[in-house]
Image (cartoon, rainbow over all chains, first blue to last red; front, side, top):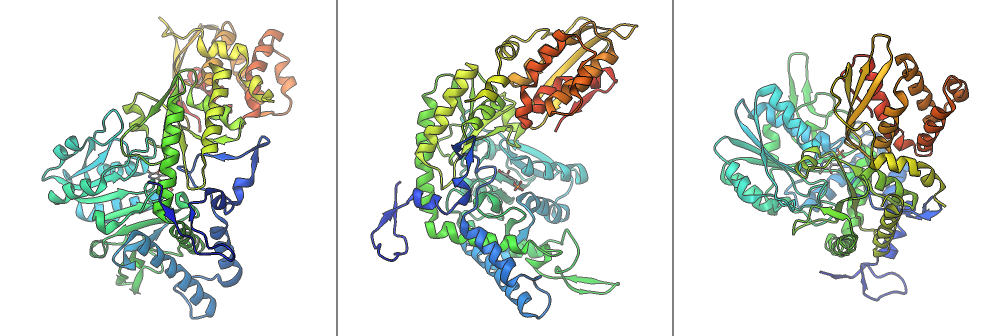
Length: 422
Length: 156
Ligand SMILES: Cc1ncc(COP(=O)(O)O)c(C=O)c1O
């Protein structure tokens, strides 16, 4: 798995280098910070990733040198802003291998992107009795919008179970598919367990039954290459802040024809073609779904983040993180009284765990004293916690900047938990 | 090093966390409430038996939580026994002030026995950990809801 990349040759250095995590770390100013006099060990990228200098600079440069509103006005700054904003859209389309830039919609968050589909697609095309399948390991963002739709129009929610190791139970999923299935809303990678779902297979089986699929790719996109055409997703959602971009922006990919068949869900400026008091006609996608002033600087920052990971190479990032996952799994498994929750064969670099001697909240507080940042709680995925009979876990989630030394620091800090609470 | 942690996880706290007192469903009680901390998924029930003179005769709890929330609930059940409801609520206020470093703590504590104050002090190590104050006060908020006739509360 450990592939070698050839970085753009820099002056005086024409050698071929492996993914150089130490060099990458220098791009992230925050990694130089200290917590309680110790270097920050940031193992919470699953909640939100840190930002490289390239993203920070792209956003400052936009605000310092060419910021204005987009799609309005003929003046130079508006034109430059619009170009940069649309260039970001193109970068995302290329990154996901969408067939057109019209398939990329900027929302305010991944959560809003899912709600957009629930409202614009759901209200128009779904009716009482239609079935929506979700998995047992969805984030609340991919459960609650469908429940709201259920309350409103009476669709039926069905839950595809997972196995004890946290993998999707494919057979059970298939048996849920039927003539009433209209939509499958499924995570690509579980934020609570790290499970990678065989999403192409899930989509193919749904399509065989005439159902559409919306994929929650929030935890997949940061960790490996995603090709929306190869997997044939109808909708694909991700959260830019988890892939080293800013907050305040979300991405919805949708097949162009599908998007253009959907009504807008919010009305305002930018999304209209013409407005009179008698009748308003709407733009096509993507602008139809971008009512109001969009997150301009954030979209530009995301464009820079996409450039950043693309230059490093998603395959190199994936290989590096897989190495960390294996190392962390091995070291944590060796700790007596610690149990990893989520041991599916296919996983992203996310390790949830519980300890006999300590509640996750206590683990979080103690390891934090040693500079180690992990997430504790139900990870906005209470149903999957219930599935394992837990209220909470502690979760270490890795990013491209993490190192084996940091895994060691985590293990050391867990020893401290045992010292205090064991 | 780790002085703050040692203060947070004192022996007494750990003992109550591991072996909570009055951790039971009481045979009779006059009010109850459920407390939830959605941040960490902690959930507990608090049961109180209050007599006609508004004196708390028994306190018990059940539920799941971290060492801090369980220890705090456990110690609370001991501290509140035989206090009047008014005094219990005043104690909750004082405890809350201790955890959040409010002013005039001394004034608030003056009305309580030294022994009670000492125990509260043990619990107030959380003030160095603002994210954990909710854990330490969950049971108390729940008790407050119970004596005021509310069914459940959520801290966020
Ligand atoms: C799997 C998954 N889906 C959805 C979301 C929601 O993302 P956001 O809160 O950025 O809208 C998250 C992030 O917490 C997530 O991990």
